[in-house]
Amino acid sequence: MEDLTRQLRSLAAPVLAVVLACVATILIWPLGQPAPFVPFIAAVILGAWLGGLRGSLVTTGLSALVLIVLHSLQTPGPVESTQDFTLRLALFAFMGVAAGYLAMQCQRAIGAHDRLQHTLASAGEAWIFTDNEGRVTFLNSLAQSWTGWSLNNARMRPLEQLFVLLHDGSRERVSLNLAEVLRQRAPQTLPPDALLLSAGGSAIPVEGAIRPIQNAEDQVVEMMLTFRDVSASRRAARELAEREARL
Image 1 (cartoon, rainbow, N blue to C red):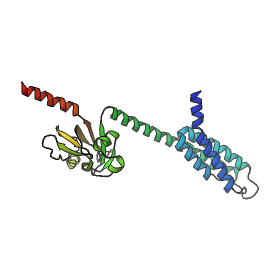
Image 2: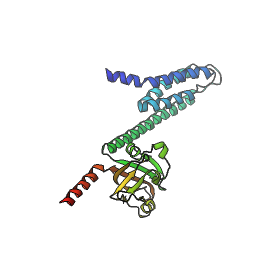
Image 3: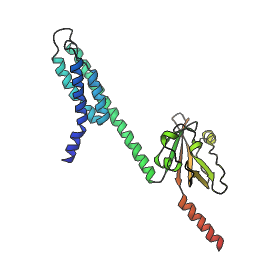
Image 4: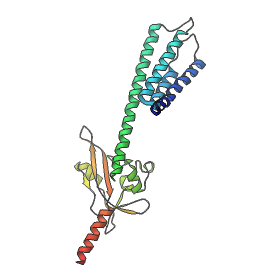
């Protein structure tokens, strides 16, 4: 019963879109002219956006029925022939199916992105993407938390502006050498004593690497920085070294 109710609710938006298209048609359509498709095209796009493939198919089907009725109501005059109307209706149906398919693929891509981000976040992995000039294009929630930069504020800024690394002992700045990553087209590991200095001033021991991402033409189009918090392991190593030094 709950599944049926959920499915009916999901169809509310497509049905409402068709109703609004009907109202718009009544307001703008002279009966002596061919039935306008534009309001129903807008309804199909809205149905696909809100309901994916199912929403698009429902909106397309209902709109097609309404358009057939409107065509039958045409008064004598410069009306559209049945052949021309059928051709337009077929193109409209094709567009509706295509819009639904594209919406479905977009929803799948968004879902895959969300699952990947959830998986990496669960594994304690932060990641930052840059273009081939080292400007930030994306960072996940962990990276935002640890660097202190939101995605909106970080986008298109130089990576070294928000990913500030220091050596643990000397507190000297670590250069990321992005040009070297591009030249060698090979991953570059972060220093073993790296500390990430957040925008708020806190320092987090991290380990990770910068990797180039190449396209089908073997050109570097992006770089991906992955890193994780290693506070616990580095603290344990320091305590072990201190115990060994006391022996």
